[in-house]
Image 1 (cartoon, rainbow, N blue to C red):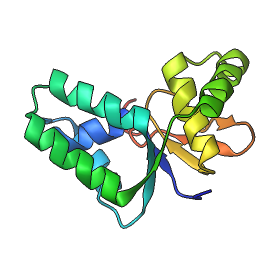
Image 2: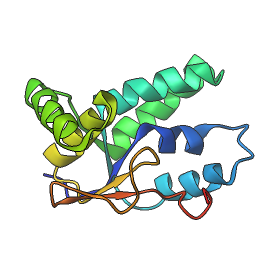
Image 3: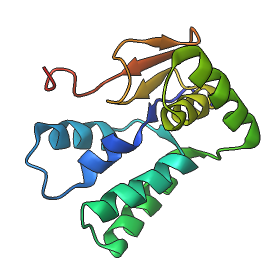
Image 4: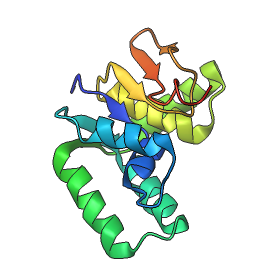
Length: 140
C-alpha cells in the first residue's frame, strides 16, 4: 500500500514529448518533476512505450525515460487479481478495459488519487480513489 498518487499514461507522454507546444506538456512536466513519489503499473509503462514510438520518439530516449520512471515510481505488476478486479470495475462503472486496469492497479496500490485525463474529473471510485485531471483548467 503506497498512499502515493497514480499517474496514467498520457500524463507521462505529455511530460516527455519534446515537440509539444501544448500547455498540457508544461503542466505534465511540473507534475511528474515534482518532489512527490508516484505509482505506475506495468501496463502504463508498456502503453507509454507504444505512445512515444507513435509520436516518433527514439527508442533510446524512451528507454531512458522508462528507466527513470521505474527508479522513481512504485511499479504495480498487473496480476490476475488486478485483472479480475478490472472486470468488476468495468461492469460497475462502464470504463474501458484499459481504464479499468489502470483503476484496479491504483486501487491495489492504495493510491488516494489517480491523475488521468481519460476519466471524469473529481469522480470517486470505490469510495477511495479520486480521479484528478491535471489539465482540467486547460481543457475547457
